[in-house]
Length: 278
Image 1: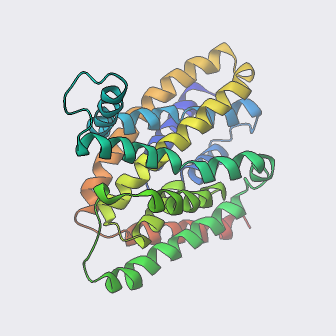
Image 2: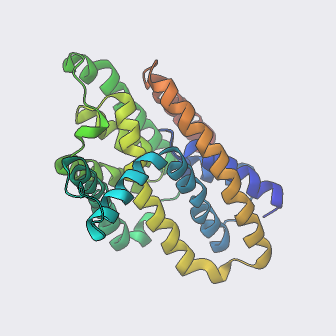
């Protein structure tokens, strides 16, 4: 893989990881368009470079993580009189809920990892894009109207939300469906606003991305030579910057516009893939 190819793949990862369009699907397509060899080392690169997206979420939501860290620090080292306050207890509980949300994905992904790897195919990606796009339209055209404007914010995230959205995140094991799309769609069905559903998606996805990247790094690091390690370091930085810009822009976009544009995009791309690669 050429250095420029690794940079382009990292840009694709950063742009698509948190948008409901499937980063995995776009990485597969970019790899084919750039005619990059489908080796185990390249597959490992595509997973580990997600560390850039992890850093982007940590950067954007640093105040939230700081609250969680402070809440646990006060529990372990009760140096403050208010260490048992309702706010700190709420922060600790919320952090646990987000951690719990990764459990269904981790279990299903671990025991079906070989089968999931066999699904990485353009046709499979196309159908996943199509189904996800139709589900987004269903929410925007039908379910949103039934809510009557009553929508939840991030602070109302609870244990049932963690379990349900965690189960929904398992749809991302279908290459091309998109982890972001799955969690946003289920978050919307749970009554969260578009912005809150996106925020939930980012935070729920963090332990998932961390676990996936660390597992791949542990199992495939020996396959990555010194040259690719340099590419990987640069790629993580590139993915970090592009993902940070996309997360901030996406949240601003959702305050004014619905998700239908992403649904149309998914459906169009799916049609093109089925036409040209069928």
